[in-house]
Length: 514
Image (cartoon, rainbow, N blue to C red):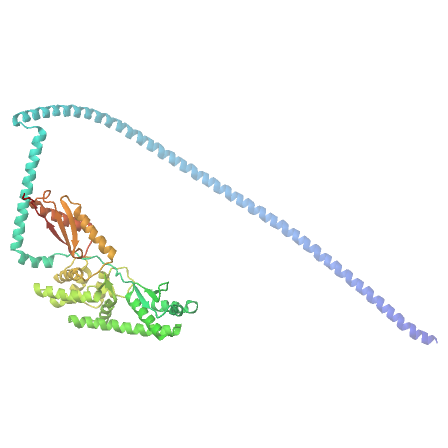
């Protein structure tokens, strides 16, 4: 029985003893962890306090250094300011001394000037008294007053001057008429003719007709992708507004404008308008236009009889086919100038082929594909230089607007031929506003002169007919009046070619039979 009790009690006692030992061990471990955590906390606090003290010390040291640096800079600046003040006081003292010297000199000269003025006044009074006595004596001897004598002398001198001037003018005109045939040849090769200024063609837009207004939406495309593609590929502005059944293409480059116009017309006729089709049509039209440019250049060379021209020159000439100036096609103008220059050279005895070549190429700069800020004469001369043209041809191209001096007779031929082609009736056109304004300016310029009753601009402004008052303007003053009006027009107005001035003076006598 005791053994059984022992077997039962001993396990229970073991279990209780094990649990007690485990509880005591856990309590011991918890106390050790708390002590360790407390030690870590105290160490962290001590370390933070030490870092805080160190940061404060460093901040105080930095503050002291900054304060010392600022005080040192302030001392240097004060020293520099004091030095500048000393220099300024020195300069001011020096200038004050100089001003005092100049004031003393001015006072001395002022006194001398006053003394001289007094002397001059006395002399002037004496001279005036003597002059008055002389005038009275002269009036007594001549029997005329001073004003009458003056008017008589001026009138005699004026009549003599007019008579001598008119006689000299008539003599010069007679000599010029006698030698006109001989001098005309010299004038043609030595005088620089007046040319029209360089202008931009009026035609910068093209209109494409549409079968209906619904086509505008198809041209624009979804979210504008069609019109953006066309504008990007051709480099033009396409204007779609309220104009019925029409689209406007705007571009200063005539070749790009032609490509855009032809491409849009083909897209409209085809009906398929989308970015891929637009790109295909633009590429095809661009190739065709480039071929057209080359063909027009070759055709122009064949028409004027020039054959040995580099490819670059042929293409530059062909691009002129799409250029206009005042409505005049530049390529047609260039061929016309070449023919006229060749005729002038043949008539006067110059180099016919060289003049024709230079005249054909004189506006080649207008067809150059370049973004240079040079004018077309300079660009054309540079293109001719690259093509290896003769130096005389280069000079004729560069000087045809008098940008440089012509150095050969062929350059003069080109100037004259260019002026003739541009100024002939019907060659060029202007907008109606500019045209009317130019004619009004011509008439108003002439009507400002004394003795002009009325002026009429006729022949598209090529001739100015002027009616003068026969009472105010005698016969011998009509020609000088015409010359003065011509000079005034040359000075005030700008115009192509020349203007013929016709003066009309008539005497009307009216009688009545009763």
